[in-house]
Figure (tube, rainbow, N blue to C red):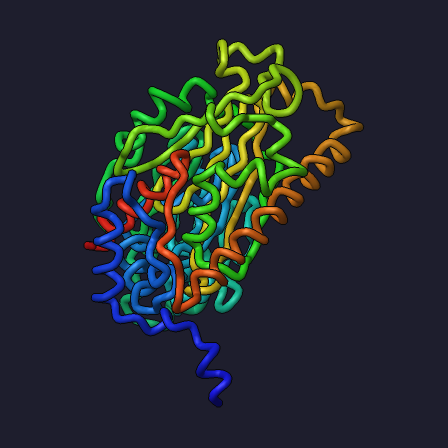
Length: 394
């Protein structure tokens, strides 16, 4: 019993008021004096509950890309803070989102991660809905007097799209208009790439033993890249002194740097007519707060949408997309091997990051820690701390 007590994470039961006080103190510091996000923010059960309410039940959450559901009836499913979500392409080309639960007794309606259907039929009692969420059939419900199918449709959710990505919010009244909030990022930085034209070639899910914010912290800084990504991203040869951190914003953060080579992986294809100058070899890493992470290259993009499964476990859905001119060069007979090589590259990169992210979670579980500090190109972490403090009321 004593051994178990000694090993217990001292931050797990930290009072919410104390966690918010520490988060507030970290957020008000100017970047030059700032310290890493307080450890209890990643371990406190009370703060996890607050995040669910203040962040994941109110903010816009990326669940995938538009090109993954190109035709009527194509769908994706996802979870947001424990709420199962279904998005479906409509006959008019629009995308609608619903709670993925039957309007009868709330059984999860669609079990598959993706697919295409004209109708959705619940496996429990065969209640059947069209792509717009309207109830078409409810077997034997004529036995109930006054039953009106029009009053029993799927619960709708707000959906928005931006630069080829699909976002859903659980909020009844969204706190912001997403394209408007992200307009400066599009106009000043990423719009030139035309991410919406990139074609998704893979979609995967992974679970790691860490807090979801540990992955956000890791993704939004490239200080670790030359040290930890020797088999993958470090080969792009971007000197740390060339990194530029973006302006401080409430809705996103980013940093960018050009790689040395104007050809090969990470550089624009010769037929890319969207990018000029140094942008033809420019990498942009950005985070749409709270949890949408993107590495954007002239020849591919890698996105992640991460969710908490607890203070000590996270689930991330990630995908890879490439521009049409790159895809056009892949012969049909070579596609499977080309994709396998790309998947192996991403698996290695994820493996490199997993070790770091889980180490960050383990290290911050300690009751005794040094003060900590930031490298100049880690400004995005300070921005994320400020975002979290603002939306959580700190």
